[in-house]
Image (cartoon, rainbow, N blue to C red; front, top):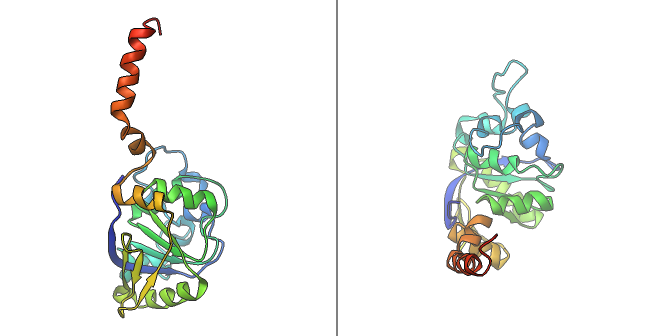
Length: 201
C-alpha cells in the first residue's frame, strides 16, 4: 500500500448526501477481484448515459476535475452494501482523500485499509471546502496527515482528528498484510520451532 503523508491536489465537489456504494461502483462491476481497472467505472451511472457517452455536467467529467485527487462530499458517504470495490474504484481513479461530515462505518474502515484518507469534519467546515472546490482547477487543497491539517486555496487552515493507529498505518503504508509482515521474524522463529517439535504437521 502506498504511503500517505502529504497530498496536494484538485478537490472535486460532490454535494450529495447518502452516496451509497452502488452509486460509487455499480453491482455489475463487482465480478473482478482485481483492484485495478475500476476507475473507469467510478460513479458509472452518473458519469455515462445509456449509450456509454460521458455526461458532460457530471463533476468528474469536467476538464477541471479529471485529475482530482480529493473529493469533498456530503453526509453519510459510502453507505449501502459493504463492497471493498468502492474504495478500489476511487483509488484507481486517483482519489486519495475524501472529506465529508460523516461516512458509513464499513466504507470508512475500508478506505484506511486501501490507502485512502477519509476525513470527518463539521458540516460548516465541509461547506467551506465545498465552496473552495467549486473553483475548478484553482481548487487546490493540501492535506497534511502528519500535522493533521487541511490548507485551502486561500491559505486558510483546518485541523482534523484521526485515530493514532490508523494515522500510523497510512503514514507507513501498512495494510493488514503489511502489519503482519512486521512480525515476519517472530513468525519465522515460531515456524522453525514448530517444525522441530511437531514434524508431522
